[in-house]
Length: 474
Image (tube, rainbow, N blue to C red; front, side):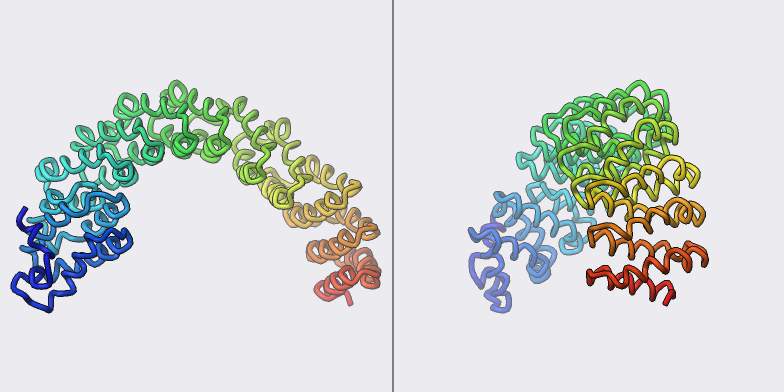
């Protein structure tokens, strides 16, 4: 490859005729050969400068072969090169010469394939781009295969339905069973998008016959990241495959994932239940959901507990009030006394969202009494949680419930022996004050705040005086 050996052999060679103005290009080219990876990466980012100086013909005949000969080792360098080449079409002479980019570089230039494919005809795609993509999908570097999986949706759109069916689907099948977990996870993450991008008339058949067998294998993959990636999208297939296929083929997979040892897998299934609810209704899953929810609710990792709390209003809405009261209400109350503050806080917000979903009558009969019982808890943190719940629930429950059921408890807690509880009483009265009528404010709230305003604790005194001022009770 004469061009490759001539390029960059000295300052003169860079310009071809001893032109010193091209000396910086020779320096860049030397950097491309340097053992230091960072230097090579920096030089690759300046490739467009070299190409502009050389002109389109020399870029095609010398620079691209030089790159092929020189840059063949580090995955990081190859990926940086692929990113640059995706914007190189104009520098090799335009779309008519775009194939040079694919011919010349060891084709992990998946980024380049995505960009170039949009410029070529269907015939050129098959002859020029597909050989590249096949090589990339089978490349010995897992990072290259990963990139094919990661950019699969863009490739699918750029290549069109015919090539997708004949070439990309077989490549995707291989990516789903790749020996590297990172590649399998990236491919699994694209399963739903793959289905959505298929022609409507072919979707069901292609997924059922050519993709589902591989999905079934991934449900029991040895790597939790692969299983988690699949769980985050698999529910979306139910809207594509319809009710009968979902019940017969997908439901067993969902049920298996709900029992998976990895919390993230179970969480990802639960967080996407709305897709299945639209197609088959959630009752099909309710008996299996319950053990999964309970396990997550009691998981040793508090972040897992936090995540399931955040999905609870969604679950409650889909499962309905009867199922919720029977199976999940006690869990929601248990979170209020969790040893981690973030869980107690999230559980409080959860109650407010549940009241908004199920209504004030439900709150009055089901939630408020249980919250108020905690006011007598020996643990002062739990007594404070009662106040936080009242703060959150008062607006959702309205004036009557707040005045008749909640206010008496708050006023009683003003005599708590722990100062932290007393100053939170002052803060709660400030919060619920605007909901109360004038009689309650003047006759019940004002005397208690005045008493707290004389408290021996400075914080209690401060927050009581602040509440008096905000509620205009001075």
